[in-house]
Image (cartoon, rainbow, N blue to C red; front, top):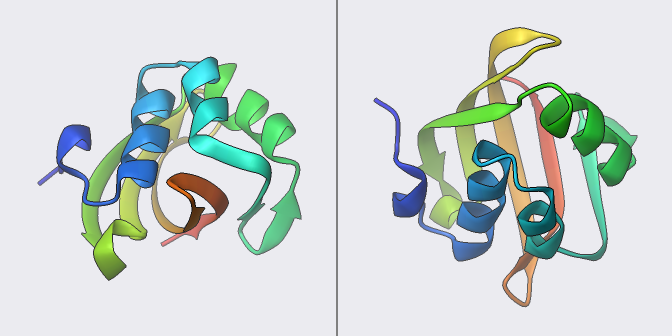
Length: 107
């Protein structure tokens, strides 16, 4: 059963997921700290380039299936126009109410 975005426990994670699902690049950027980092399948990526390709130019969408670690770890059915749908795991670090790092990969 999908967890509604507005019911996610961590406010920084909730803001980032909401930005992805509403295709709101400004809100996505605002949900991140300056210099935020990320990795995809264990490889560090440039956050801006990754988000452009995997989310904003390809209709990325996150359906959260479960959360743990106070909302900092998610299992998500992620889909976009490049890869289709896949089960993914996400792990977030936050600083001052914004995401400072996230790691994603197939679950």
